[in-house]
Image 1: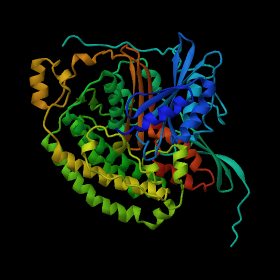
Image 2: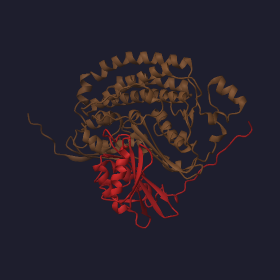
Image 3: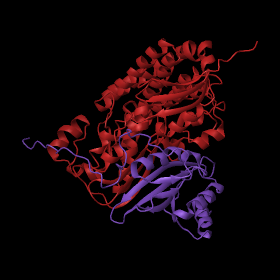
Image 4: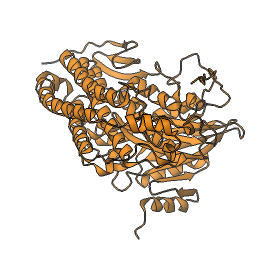
Length: 160
Length: 392
């Protein structure tokens, strides 16, 4: 049996003493503390991952922290169908992350959006301003769970 | 002859609120005729799909996620439903997979004609604008006959599709294919081989292979820069693993190559449609698990009688198990990715929607640096950037 491409990546990452796991042939993830994220990202780039597809922030209000997921992938021949996730956490108190823009330029939009939507500051990003939101939206982070939106009730016609 | 560049610097608001295919503002910093820097002021059509996604049931989100790109809604719909299917773990019958590919390819052709038409009007070629929208119309009519709506079809549902195809739709499609084949020759004569259009597109907005990868370009724009990548080949979904088609790739990376990729993809999509018409298997169009929930009288009248699905009760507010799923499809403008995280409740905990135009924001910004001011619209048109899709 030939070794899967994703297993090679996981093995390489485990040598760095970070917890990496392959979920299927084409999906895998690595969990890193935020101070080592640049180091792991550089390693993944060396292994052939050449672009970031998405930067996702997820709010966990009970634990007062925000999870960040970078979906990275590659256009090279042996890795093109793999999406690898870099998962990391940052707390509300110290809502700063090192930016991965030095490693992958394509994280530009995602980091900027995560900054305005969740209030995570990416250190090293050249343009940390608001992107989609209007100018008067200062100080409020709409994708945090504490930000509630008003919803209309749903009308169901039961006469039929 | 020395050209004297007037040393005037300044800023210009292009648009200012609707420069072309949607609402946005392009703030251009000029020195003379040369663009020094470009700032894209996006967000005019931001509908907070991701936030609303955390407040609605999974089924109620289907019409929402296709709003950002109404002209490409089958793909937006399908990508989301594929992610939900992964979480609730449901198999889709073969016929439904073929029908998904059918609707997606019809939509891709319509979307590309729209893009070429918009490019034409950007370059001041109004005939192609009229032609683009006219030729798109016949494909939109097919979608209307199949799904009941011109755009925002909500055709794909978890476990299958909403309506079956009929012989009259197949006939319409055959006519549309032969019409479009004939018309594409006229397109080449009037637009793609037109010296004026070529002069406006060739060597304008050149993006090398390395730049395309670094900036995160997707779809036809990526393939025009020499990267062979298409989600339909890389990670086949729907019926694409059984269909034979080519991926057009160009090395030049300029606006002309990007337009040519779109033109050739129309031909490839029609090839796919012909194969689907020929090969489509018989069978149910919704997963067995959901079909048996439909009451017998309604089953007889609607599903068997008219080939239409009556939505089973399960959909009302199902609670999928905990988990997360990433799905991707090749939408008209490029790779579309969804990340759905479920916490076991009836609403997603997090819905992330990465549209192709969203990833083009940075590409657009970088491509415009150092070009002449008149080329900004040419680059905009050739990228087929669609602001509502980028803003979501």
